[in-house]
Each structure stands twice: as structure tokens, then as C-alpha cells.
Image (cartoon, rainbow, N blue to C red; front, side, top):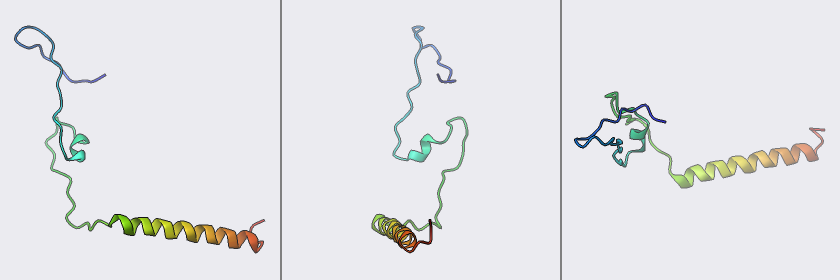
Length: 77
């Protein structure tokens, strides 16, 4: 259920508002009722996908290695 007001057209039929398609996914997070500035962060340097995937893979392998060594050494019982 939406809270938008649907006004009748010239023939009296109720016309539902169809939102415009936008390439900016952040525009769907903003309410059309507020005139807010676009969310931009020029200071951010995005990390590439291969580097971020490598980071998580190394972190997972390190965690697994610590758990295996800890359980095999009898540190956790």
C-alpha cells in the first residue's frame, strides 16, 4: 500500500503514478518529496573486485588455519 495521492485524469479515471527509471540506484533510496543533494563522496577510492575478493579469501584461509592449529594443538577443548 502506498501513501501517494492518485488524482483522476480528465475522464475521471484514477491514474497511478509510474516512477521514472534511473541508472542511479541511490535515487530510489531518496524520497521524491524532499529535494536533497545527491550522495557523492569524492574522497573515496573504491577497491577493485579482485583485490577485495583476495582480501576475503586470505582472511578466510587465515581464520581456518588458526582454528585448525588451535584445535590440533589442544588449545581449545
